Length: 144
Image 1 (tube, rainbow, N blue to C red):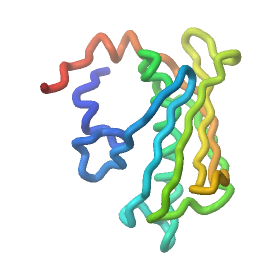
Image 2 (cartoon, helix red, strand yellow; image 1 turned 90 degrees about the horizontal axis):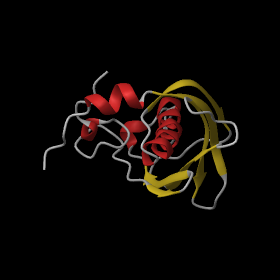
Image 3 (cartoon, helix red, strand yellow; image 1 turned 60 degrees about the vertical axis):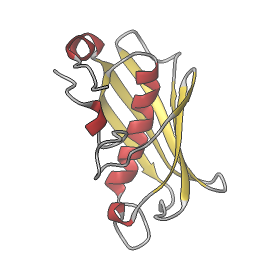
Image 4 (cartoon, rainbow, N blue to C red; image 1 turned 135 degrees about the horizontal axis):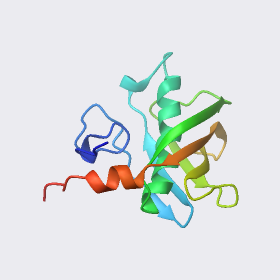
Protein backbone atom coordinates (compact mmCIF):
# COMPACT_ATOMS: atom_id res chain seq x y z
CA UNK A 1 0.00 0.00 0.00
CA UNK A 2 1.43 3.37 -0.96
CA UNK A 3 0.40 6.90 0.01
CA UNK A 4 1.29 8.68 -3.22
CA UNK A 5 -0.05 12.21 -2.73
CA UNK A 6 -2.07 13.04 0.37
CA UNK A 7 -2.76 16.48 -1.11
CA UNK A 8 -5.14 14.73 -3.52
CA UNK A 9 -7.23 13.26 -0.67
CA UNK A 10 -10.93 13.87 -1.34
CA UNK A 11 -11.57 14.93 2.25
CA UNK A 12 -8.57 17.05 3.22
CA UNK A 13 -6.37 17.39 0.13
CA UNK A 14 -5.80 21.06 -0.55
CA UNK A 15 -4.78 20.31 -4.15
CA UNK A 16 -7.96 18.39 -5.01
CA UNK A 17 -10.27 20.90 -6.72
CA UNK A 18 -13.22 18.48 -6.50
CA UNK A 19 -12.61 17.57 -2.85
CA UNK A 20 -13.89 19.00 0.41
CA UNK A 21 -10.51 20.62 1.29
CA UNK A 22 -11.13 20.29 5.03
CA UNK A 23 -8.66 21.89 7.43
CA UNK A 24 -8.62 20.22 10.86
CA UNK A 25 -7.70 21.41 14.34
CA UNK A 26 -6.66 18.97 17.06
CA UNK A 27 -6.55 18.14 20.75
CA UNK A 28 -5.34 14.89 22.35
CA UNK A 29 -8.14 12.57 21.21
CA UNK A 30 -10.19 14.90 19.04
CA UNK A 31 -10.14 16.49 15.57
CA UNK A 32 -12.57 19.10 14.29
CA UNK A 33 -13.19 21.32 11.34
CA UNK A 34 -15.68 23.99 10.36
CA UNK A 35 -16.88 24.08 6.79
CA UNK A 36 -19.61 25.28 4.45
CA UNK A 37 -20.61 22.70 1.86
CA UNK A 38 -20.89 23.77 -1.77
CA UNK A 39 -23.89 22.93 -3.99
CA UNK A 40 -21.85 20.31 -5.86
CA UNK A 41 -22.13 18.13 -2.71
CA UNK A 42 -25.91 18.24 -2.45
CA UNK A 43 -28.39 15.41 -2.75
CA UNK A 44 -31.86 16.90 -2.57
CA UNK A 45 -31.95 20.69 -3.07
CA UNK A 46 -30.31 22.52 -0.19
CA UNK A 47 -29.06 19.46 1.69
CA UNK A 48 -25.86 17.44 1.56
CA UNK A 49 -25.79 14.04 -0.12
CA UNK A 50 -25.68 11.20 2.41
CA UNK A 51 -22.39 9.97 0.97
CA UNK A 52 -20.83 13.36 1.63
CA UNK A 53 -22.17 13.37 5.20
CA UNK A 54 -20.63 9.92 5.69
CA UNK A 55 -17.34 11.13 4.20
CA UNK A 56 -17.23 14.08 6.61
CA UNK A 57 -17.67 11.78 9.60
CA UNK A 58 -15.12 9.25 8.34
CA UNK A 59 -12.58 11.98 7.62
CA UNK A 60 -12.90 13.49 11.11
CA UNK A 61 -12.30 10.11 12.72
CA UNK A 62 -9.33 9.35 10.47
CA UNK A 63 -7.76 12.70 11.35
CA UNK A 64 -7.80 11.87 15.05
CA UNK A 65 -5.64 8.85 14.23
CA UNK A 66 -3.38 10.67 11.77
CA UNK A 67 -2.62 13.33 14.40
CA UNK A 68 -1.44 10.47 16.63
CA UNK A 69 0.88 9.32 13.83
CA UNK A 70 -1.33 6.38 12.91
CA UNK A 71 -2.47 5.52 9.40
CA UNK A 72 -5.56 3.36 9.66
CA UNK A 73 -8.28 2.22 7.30
CA UNK A 74 -11.98 2.13 8.04
CA UNK A 75 -13.13 -1.43 8.66
CA UNK A 76 -16.69 -0.74 9.82
CA UNK A 77 -18.72 2.46 9.78
CA UNK A 78 -22.24 3.17 11.01
CA UNK A 79 -24.00 6.48 10.42
CA UNK A 80 -27.20 7.82 11.96
CA UNK A 81 -28.72 10.68 10.00
CA UNK A 82 -30.74 12.76 12.46
CA UNK A 83 -31.44 15.94 10.48
CA UNK A 84 -30.54 17.07 6.95
CA UNK A 85 -27.06 18.59 6.71
CA UNK A 86 -27.45 21.93 4.93
CA UNK A 87 -25.58 23.32 1.95
CA UNK A 88 -24.37 26.97 2.23
CA UNK A 89 -24.41 27.02 6.06
CA UNK A 90 -21.67 26.70 8.66
CA UNK A 91 -21.29 23.21 10.10
CA UNK A 92 -18.83 21.71 12.57
CA UNK A 93 -17.51 18.18 12.13
CA UNK A 94 -15.90 16.54 15.18
CA UNK A 95 -14.14 13.19 15.55
CA UNK A 96 -13.14 11.58 18.82
CA UNK A 97 -11.28 8.41 19.81
CA UNK A 98 -12.47 5.93 22.43
CA UNK A 99 -9.13 5.13 24.13
CA UNK A 100 -10.63 2.65 26.58
CA UNK A 101 -12.19 0.48 23.87
CA UNK A 102 -9.29 0.71 21.40
CA UNK A 103 -6.37 -1.72 21.26
CA UNK A 104 -2.94 -1.41 19.67
CA UNK A 105 -4.24 -2.44 16.22
CA UNK A 106 -8.01 -1.82 16.36
CA UNK A 107 -9.20 1.73 17.01
CA UNK A 108 -12.76 2.79 17.85
CA UNK A 109 -13.92 6.31 17.12
CA UNK A 110 -17.06 8.38 16.90
CA UNK A 111 -17.90 11.59 15.05
CA UNK A 112 -20.75 14.04 14.72
CA UNK A 113 -21.85 17.01 12.65
CA UNK A 114 -23.37 20.07 14.31
CA UNK A 115 -25.15 23.05 12.80
CA UNK A 116 -24.15 26.57 13.80
CA UNK A 117 -26.43 26.39 16.86
CA UNK A 118 -24.81 23.17 18.11
CA UNK A 119 -27.65 20.86 17.06
CA UNK A 120 -26.42 17.36 16.15
CA UNK A 121 -27.33 16.58 12.54
CA UNK A 122 -25.55 13.25 12.07
CA UNK A 123 -23.50 10.81 14.15
CA UNK A 124 -21.09 8.11 13.15
CA UNK A 125 -19.09 5.42 14.84
CA UNK A 126 -16.37 3.34 13.29
CA UNK A 127 -13.74 0.70 13.75
CA UNK A 128 -10.38 1.38 12.11
CA UNK A 129 -7.52 -1.06 11.57
CA UNK A 130 -4.01 0.34 12.02
CA UNK A 131 -1.97 0.05 8.82
CA UNK A 132 0.86 2.36 9.87
CA UNK A 133 3.63 -0.13 9.13
CA UNK A 134 2.26 -0.75 5.62
CA UNK A 135 1.46 2.87 4.74
CA UNK A 136 4.06 5.02 6.54
CA UNK A 137 6.95 2.90 5.34
CA UNK A 138 5.97 3.59 1.73
CA UNK A 139 5.06 7.26 1.97
CA UNK A 140 6.51 9.50 -0.68
CA UNK A 141 7.87 12.89 0.24
CA UNK A 142 5.57 15.83 -0.40
CA UNK A 143 6.86 18.46 -2.78
CA UNK A 144 8.21 21.54 -1.05
